[in-house]
Length: 388
Image (cartoon, rainbow, N blue to C red; front, side, top):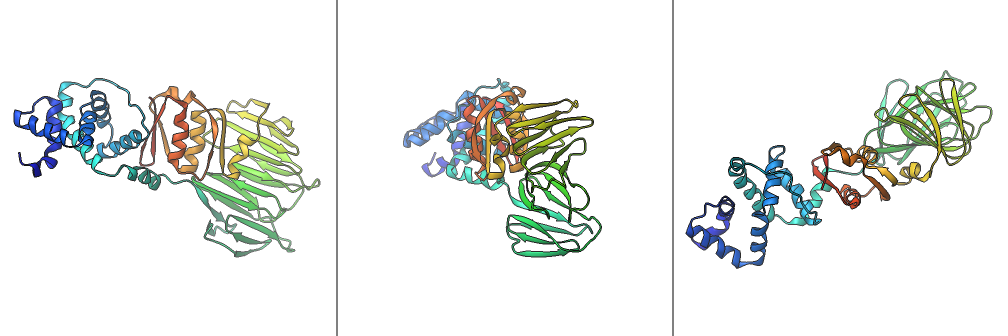
C-alpha cells in the first residue's frame, strides 16, 4: 500500500482491526501508521476501546451519529470518563462499527477547540427583551437596541430606555386602560409603573397593569416571576393578582414566582410587609419569610435566605442544596433549552453554588457536573441528563 494512500484508508483499516478481518498487508500498513506518530497510537487505542464502541453503538440507535460525536469530543476534552452501558450483539457491531470509526476519524481531524464555540453558538444566554402590548392591541418589541423612545398614550407617557420602560402619568382623567408586558424565554426586562413602583420580570413572564392607577387599590396581574419594589401609598394598597391567589402590600420589596408549569407559588419577602391570600386563608409575611402555596391548595410559611430567590435580578443564579430538577427548570427558561432526563434519579441530585446568568451555557454545565455523578449531553438545544 502506497504511503500517500494510507491516510485516507485508515478509517477502513481501523474498522477491520476492530472486526478482526485485517489481511497481513493491511495489518502491516496499520502498524506502520501507528508507529509513525504518538498521536496515531493514542487514536488507535481510543478507537479500539470496547467501552467506547459499545456506548457509541447504543447511542447510534437513538441519535444522529455526527451530532452525537460532537458531544463526545466535548466530554473527552473535560476528561469525563465514559462508563459501559450495555453489550451489543455481534451483528450490530458489524453494521455500526465501520460507521463509528469513520465519524471518530473525521472528528479527530477537526480542531478540538472549535467544539465549545459550536456549543456557545447554539445555546445562548438570555438577554434584555420583551414585547409591549398597548391597550388598543398595538405591539412594540423592546430590547437594549431600542433606546430613548417615547410613546404617547392617553393617561401616561411611555419612556423606553434600553433595559426598561417607564410610565409617567399625565393629568388627564380617563378610563382605566391596561397594557401588557410579555417577556419570552431567554429574556428579562424591567418596568416602572406610573406610581413609581419598579418591577423586574424574569424569563417567560407576563405582567398586565393599568396605564394609570385609579380607584382604591393598585392592582396588577402576574404570570411567571417578578421582583417588586413597591412605592409606599397607605391609602392605595398594591395588589399582585395571581388568579388563584393574591399578594397585598403597602410598600415593600418582594419576589413572586407563579409559573403555570410549576407545582408551587412562592412569595418571598425581602423587606416591608405583605399579606399572601388564597380564598379565605391569608398569611402575613415578615422579612426573610416565604409563603408557599402548593398545587393541592395547602398554604405554609417558612424562613429562607431571600438572596437565593432574588439574585436572578442582579444577574446571578444562586442555589443551596437545591434539587437538580428545580435548577434545570430555572436554567432552561433563561437559555431556552429542552431538558430530557435519561435517569430519573438525577432529578434528586442537589447542588450548592452560584453562577452568572450571562455566562455561556458550557460553564453552567461544568459547574453542575461538579456534583460528581451527573453527565450532560448537548445536542442542539436539547440537553440529555444521565448518571455517569
